[in-house]
Length: 395
Image (tube, rainbow, N blue to C red):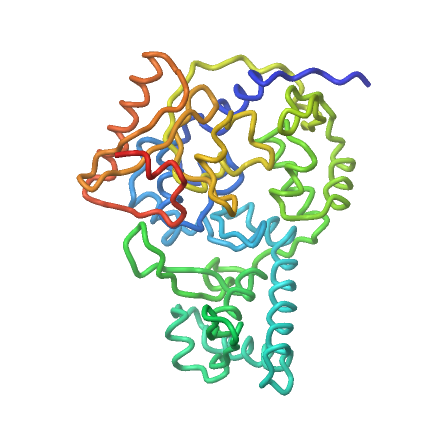
């Protein structure tokens, strides 16, 4: 069949229409981008505010901790996200157990290499059993509390003993991370301010009030790839492989099974020419261009991190936005592309730096949005964990 031609302008229109459209709930925001990044605690709240200006900290807290309609889960690329509750089983099924299995293998390998463990696999199994027992009957406990009371979690390994930067690494937190990735336990109540992370671990069934539905890796892949294409498409095979943290074989099989349609994309990866993208079979209509909108997104926002190839919305600003390990910083968006960065000053005001000419109307919209964000933050001063290179240039 002939392949429709989708221009960069249409891609930006899809970006704005689907991911920056106003939402009326925390879960609605998460659904609009599949899931929210949660590596930085404050990003959960700031990503939500960017798409739901009426939201409050209490609204997000209610979704996370009271209603439990949004669940923290380690999933794609061994990264922590917040998933809508109905998406959670698909995410765990698609990649969660794979992440857990890789964590187990890596931990056992490191223990074997370090020495001092008669049977590393048995040690890990014993530690898991101890955690299950400690978290019975809905108990919520911090990592520190569990390590203090469970001798089974006391192990540690030494790394690079011949290097000045060598040291020891406790194994207890790694056991909890592994069990969390597999959907057995979950980060539940948080003991700190909204922009800091001090979670208590809880049994997943106790937290949900029911067993987590079991989804096969195959069905999980189909569901998650459908969601990504609906929110981020058109996108390339490489985009999907990177985002899902999966394999080309699994992604290609899923794309074929859901009958994704190939489309031509302007300006392929890093200017290499036309690239092949994919959309859902019912998503071939042209999208009307929306009015330009100003957005201030936090570090690791799901839109900034949504694709592997980012030049079409980054322009020439990659080295300003992303650090050396690929973490995206706090960005200013206009008309579906990154045009600058922002930071909160010590006095609470929000400063912006623009790297592109967006006209006076765009500049005024960005300034208004910065003032709105400063007002929403009030006396709070959340600190990011991954400052982008441009942060040093903003006064």
